[in-house]
Image (cartoon, rainbow, N blue to C red; front, side):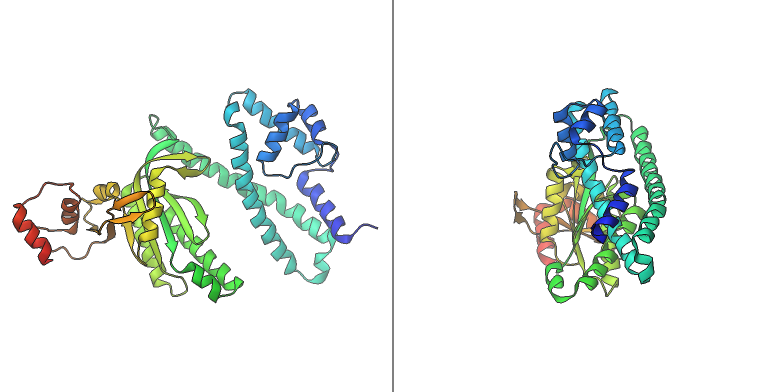
Length: 361
């Protein structure tokens, strides 16, 4: 006698996989015309468990997917040298999406009255929702394609993999302590509220969320001013929300390597190190970004004492904040002072008076 849970799983599989399981991995490779070892590498790269050669776990949809992937490589669209890397990135991103969607579906099923939780009812619900999810995902994917294509064609001479951008981390302060003080439901609410706020603010100011790392968001922005507004707005809005912990941020500007949706390089590491030494409610920026923001009257930059962090000795960051009322005198704005302290502009007064003025501040 078949277990009811197993029957439901089989019903859902037929809906989700587009048919019954009827092929082994070797049969899929043969039907798709793809070498055995290559099909094995692609299957693993997608994040699926290794299956025995005699296990009947694949469907007609698997054959078609393998055939399509092979055609993309044969056409030259995907270089054979990065085929596995592309497949791995695709599997990782879609795996997270699928996990979230199944959690959402399970919550929906639990909210139904008992009669609505039967095998047929659940199967019909999934069968009805699947095309809607596919349409939404397809729309979002196409919109992102349009956005990135617009950028690529707007700057045809720019190398899209390695380019100059501002990298920023915004980190919730006291997250570890918070996890010990509140329950799972409350923690989920806090994380959801932070992710929602971060996503909205980053999008509003033309940035891109690279990834959420638990209590932290990693983002990039093309323009220094956009990055500054993202960090400042997130800091201000979390401070104003009594239900969210305060945040701290670190940002750096320079060349990054963008690879399969993630970013790498010394600039990313530097932004992370700056975040680790920032105080609650503080935004620290590196010398390069301080240079780029020095002439922006909307901001103040205050140079901090040198700090040593992993990989960087005597790092001298600047604290970024919104400009207050403009002072008068030799330093009409803190940007000028910060720029001079960073050695970005020539001094405007003799050395001795300038030293005395600093000691008197």
